[in-house]
Picture 1 (tube, helix red, strand yellow):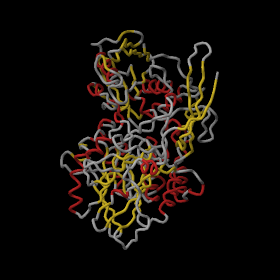
Picture 2 (cartoon, one colour):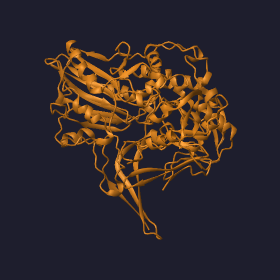
Picture 3 (cartoon, one colour):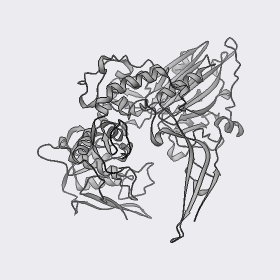
Picture 4 (cartoon, helix red, strand yellow):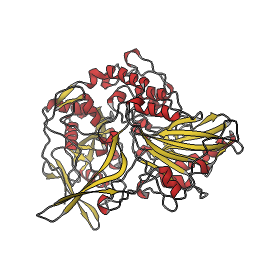
Length: 627
């Protein structure tokens, strides 16, 4: 039988919820005169834009707008088992044209306003930006009036020197479209960011100097607000090692607290941290069936003993709890989730911590009062809430529309090229063991790529990290008016947008098995919950492994190649992308591989494989099994 009913989940508009629970963020006066003892200041913030100039599609282009869900229960008449599903109310959101328009509208009536961001403005970007080394996104950020941003981990995707170029300007001599990238296309010039990119905790080991400014001070009429910008200290674990060679990433708390007295020495007492690290709201529901579904755009975190964030998944909590009480607010990112929270500072005073989801779908508006007499923010005045960047045509910014149109013309010859066709959708939907059809395809493409063969040795095993697969290949998609089932370079790039290089290396069978154990934390028997995000590596055809969950933990089972058990002492040539080869995603076992050889780009291997195997149909392998 089937039945449906509507459930009302917990969660209300952020400001109302904070006031109802007795939070200190009660809102400031809106009538403070510019020549009086206080002035009202508006902060507009966002994070994790990732070069999404055009409106993002799929689930990445929607935001949950209502805490009303329709729950449907279905009972199998043969087994008596009841399953539940629920659909949230959503709205399409995002796109730089609309982001710019909403920001302009929000600034109206606020003479003292600043627009700030918390990192990953570029990197893992759609082709429209990535094909030009993310110069279009910097141009778009200049146009919408971004005042300052922190650096994020993805700003290091092409190395720190490229990040410095994005900040300072100049063109790359990259061969005018070689490797499907082109700096300063069509005779354009690139002047760099009109806003500072702050990297307080990223230093050159040789000199101790930060690679970019650590702080920035915004001056209003009679008011100074200092900004400290940082990325997460664990950035080296999630970026390519070659791009950060010679750098050190220092602890976020120690770095920021050391900068507070330096800002105070400049007469700056009002301080805000922009940090590319974040949290995940605890998702609650009125019934167990719906648990885990709530993630409203205006999710408010309760005050008191609970932060409203899931502690194991929220590294921002201990950071916020230890940052100096002189810091008045924390604008965070990285986790792509929306929240407006109160986390007490070390003095026990409430302090606002915010995040605005990702891809320009939300803007956090924070209003605060600055007291000229104390030269500080009135902490009790700080009030924030997240606002949806709707795609109402009235908000469409013509300057951003022109930027998109110009680059779409320049990208068309690369993006519209048809690589081949697929017979059906090929997605990241995984088996109970964690294997996906798209993961199979990418691993097979890497194994088949001849660019990683060296000394007559071709790889026999390919590994692909699931986090590097960013979207699905869908049969019906028609991004460039191609026929149904045809796959363009643009579509392929959206699947693998990092421009990683393929690397082949030699591992023993024992080392391969240890890497497989590292997926869930390492060790012969390890609980899959012992790390925050277990990784299930996707593998190429002919290679297979199994595992079991036991009361003692997760146990690796047989590991085979061509049906034969891998020999612990035997050696095997493997291929993966340079991020994984450098130990990314918590897989340090790859670093011990010998005979490293760099091949071509992963996207090229993917594109070539699709061309050679068109029309492509998903394989029926069971390469990964769970007992």
